[in-house]
Image (cartoon, rainbow, N blue to C red):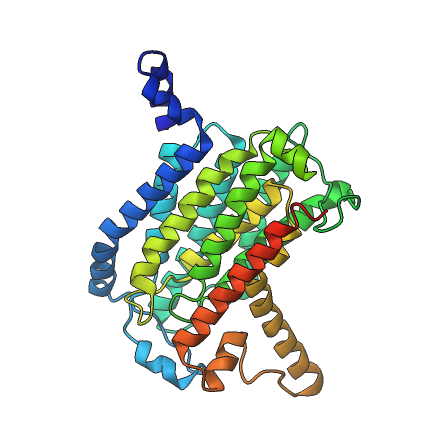
Length: 358
């Protein structure tokens, strides 16, 4: 919004010319998101506590989690608010990519909000039924991917990390594939959100990585040099990703161990979907497997655990998702969190290296 208000003034005041640069607006969006988070965070915590929006503790979870009872949840609303406001103000809101990113983020946030509200009303860890939640996620993803797929110049060709000459064209099957990327990323982040600050760390790392990926993908010379698909206009998503990083950082101030508030599904589902749709729009869908290595590991641990128990009546892990496994092995919570953050940074560095190693 400010882009359209302030940039035209550059003909009179040359200082406003800086608003044409994505890097400047990304930095400004990050600062704004961080400021919003710091200002509104304490108020939101007090409000959630006053409304008794306290996180229901799973009865089958680790015993140490009983100490977390009474901690306000739905703190993800702080992230979404800071993210949306800073993006609307500093990104090019006429960009289809920004519009779709905000649509998917808001859509999944609504699903998470309803899920959290039902959990609080029922005072249990069960909210929306798995079927209803999954179908709702598919519906939001389908609308976004369908609009994107039929845009002139957009194709169903995939980029494969490390192999520049392997570019399979999925054709119309790209639509369900892209939906899977968005829904899968959303639920994987949701599964990771089980310890104080555990999910938001890798989310920030992944968003920072995709901020860079979006910038070079939307820059003709950089894309040509790196031999990656050039997507005109997608660089604007760098502003969106920068806002994710900063709003996440602001939230982490209150979510770090011991947490003053939890993210809730309103935050985890929305942030995962935001990363997924950015991966789709930048044509780096498969790269998400590397960038989000922590999320992939968490999701696979649940899949293996469930499959093993149903087929063999034996568990692979002490508890799934895998961060609970290490809890039961006696690892202190801060140690698990920081080590998972380190792994996410390593994954992002590996992912960035693939941009040149093709």
